[in-house]
Length: 237
Image 1: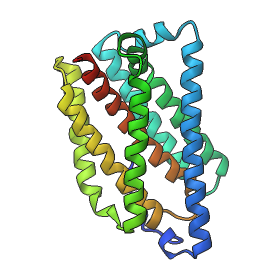
Image 2 (image 1 turned 180 degrees about the horizontal axis):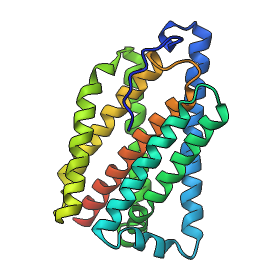
Image 3 (image 1 turned 90 degrees about the vertical axis):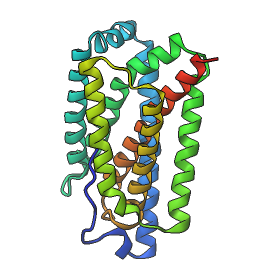
Image 4 (image 1 turned 45 degrees about the vertical axis):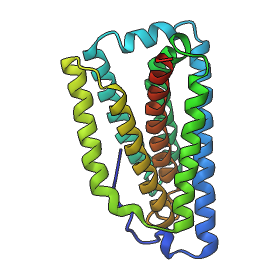
């Protein structure tokens, strides 16, 4: 997940009121569109007769899942770079769309397990919790007007540490457990605060697509681990 600070000319903080409002509206409209596209894609994938085989293939081995995660990171990097294109709006939308598709694919195994081997309400419960927490964090930034860009270093360290633990778990076969999922929810919350403050202060006013991609990535990360938490707790009932 890119964490480049947006201290650039034409930053939102230096724009006029109307330009700031337009940028914020466009950002969250594109975020809503990305979430809607993700939901539609997951629905369509689950209607395909081969979705079970695809989910099983993706997690058939630790090495296979490691390859999937590696490819996802590469695609995420490319998508973010395209979404930040300063010359081609079409490339920006292509980047956002590519990232949503990649998230829909990588979520397939987890959603399949949640849908078929867990309590029937775990997915909507996790979705509602994710949106509620996201709304609360967003409201905190907008109300306090606090710039959370100081969290950049801590988020980078936390992200690399989490990636190392995940890779270690795949290589050596140890379970990450409930506490790791809870810690990742907190990390995702930090990303939401960071990117939301960037929306208010540091993105350029023409970077609404890139801003929406960053926020969508944070929401997807949070939803992934909240879903894991809800599934774990449901399994203890």
